[in-house]
Length: 631
Image (tube, rainbow, N blue to C red):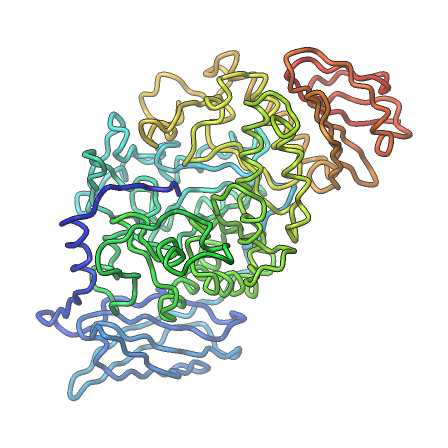
């Protein structure tokens, strides 16, 4: 999620705060249970414990019982708000799937609600990601409209849908994504990462005098429902099954730090400490340094970690164990029910450390192969290592398996936009990778060239196709798991200034009435097809070449603007040689003998042309060669 900076304070902020600390007794309504979260559960989970959130008018004032073989009600937790009860259950390994009735009694009153325990399926789930994968990041509302009937609903807080307004919903949905699985597979995508699909039933917000919708998905209002405007739970389930049938994986975007101001449990909070609160509205500083600084102040730490992302996104209190359980169980429920394969965590470093470790571990205990990677938007290797498994003696040790590699992203940009120097240009890429020893598993880091919060890659490099190809080559040949933002393969462009909407344009051809269809070669112009085919060629080669995606990496110090590295295993060696200068270069290869001895020729993977001699390699200006070495 992007780092928001709002000027909203004053009366609106104070009003929101007052709403949050006021409980709704619902005394005028008939006592009862209107919902239970998780909405259902399973027998046979490794962790036998389940905490049921029971909600409804005065539901917290009742004493509960249930009867189902193998299921025991251990404890009832009461909170300040009489509309809530949190029930601790244990589900033994012998428990059978089925339904039971939860019964609440108070004096002469009785309330009841049925609950289902399902049998677990053997369908693929939590398959994880590795270096052989190529992730494609999709913003569902802006990609393709597969079902116009779900564009808007009058009973939702925001019933607007207008493609002419960059800040409103445009109607893209999950069915639209599913309709283009052939397209993704054509250019080598193996995993789809969708910006959040969970319900964002948020009202329009006034941000700097402009009305905006929550089309981005980062303001949850009901954890257990996929947004109806995206197709709902059923559409999401169908997408996952369709992707799995093709051998593709699904990455879900998780948000633990905050929810939307219109979340049902924010409108009637279980307790005042359900969210972080200050005497007056306090925004996070967005400064990561206090979290890692041994010399930092507690005050700075508190503002960074506990301040709100925006006035419209209340900051959840992870030190409240009921909040923690709710979020962890939702994560487990999501993987089990929708059968997703990996978990991207939004605003990772804004979450409480111990909570994140417990959440990660709960997922890993139940699904050992799941891949978890978070967003920690930092600018140096040490800071990045702090939020992932690492080899540094930090006071706190993170157990997160992976992270988005923002530091390498910055180095890519510098390499493409700076002249070569001792510490400039492509030297930055070499220097960042030279520090990989700080990570426990650097090959698992997720690499990228841009995303939904950033200026578009093609614009950042001045719409230079040669630079475009160099950057894409690095992305798809160096260590890590590469991720591509939707439209980068067809040269979609723009800067965030004046708004994020500029880098979240609709994919041409994804909507009825589009004049161009970039999903097809005939709909793309010559440059766009050149870019698309370049990505396609390299991504598919990478997918089928273990040396390139899971082999070792050996890099050499850049000289005169030329950067050389090798990916290799016992079966194959691939040489990547980049000339970042404006002049053609003759690269003498004797200093790479440790990796080239025994090889006499090569195949140029991108041009399909043979290279008959390796003693000197001619590299055109602003070009990256990918050579499969041969004996």
